[in-house]
Length: 142
Image (tube, rainbow, N blue to C red; front, side):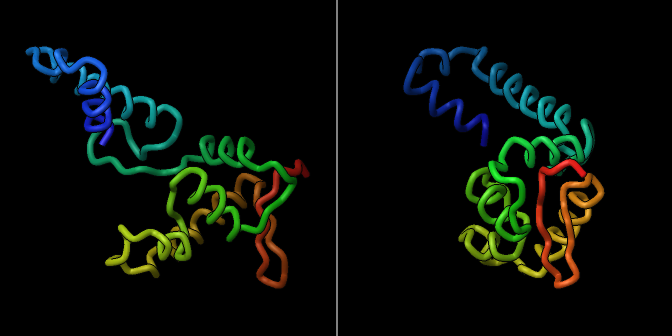
């Protein structure tokens, strides 16, 4: 997807560059740069082999601290507003149901994603769970 976006942009700005024998080299370099960056910041499970996107603790903490403008927000709202609407990350069932591309997926899988995200946030001290099942993502240092 990144290479395709770069090709579309380059075809508008400098189409002659796409016709040279070097045209595949910059695509590979761009793809490798993206993978290396995602791995370094904690957005990939591994730097080599079979990879998938993930939110390692450092990246998750950075996202919470950079995006919350209030001291706390309901976990469900964090998933919908911050992760899905602002960052295009689909973690929970509600966000998945709003995404047409995922209409064929089993939405119960996203319940597991949300539970794992809540556990990770809690381990970082960024989630407060209350007795009435309310979960609040918080940036308050306790």
